[in-house]
Amino acid sequence: MRVTGYTFISTSKQQLMEELAVAMQHREVSYPNGPIAAEIEAFDFVYTRTDVRYSAPEGLHDDCVCALALAVHAAGRRSRWVPL
Image (tube, rainbow, N blue to C red; front, side):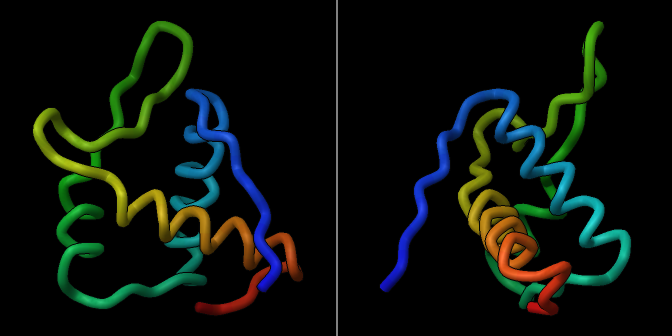
């Protein structure tokens, strides 16, 4: 199995979330009902003085959203866009 690491820092997470948002807007990614859909529904963005921050509301998780974003990112690296 070929595995590539990804360093999660504030800026790299924001880039992942923006990439996922674009893929979702273009209907290039889909996901099943359940935990992923629930997290995406709860996921939010906040405008700061310098940028936009994407995150789960306090007390909730964003693990599934991050996993989906990583999958979209990896698919985009293999080719232009690979429908999931």
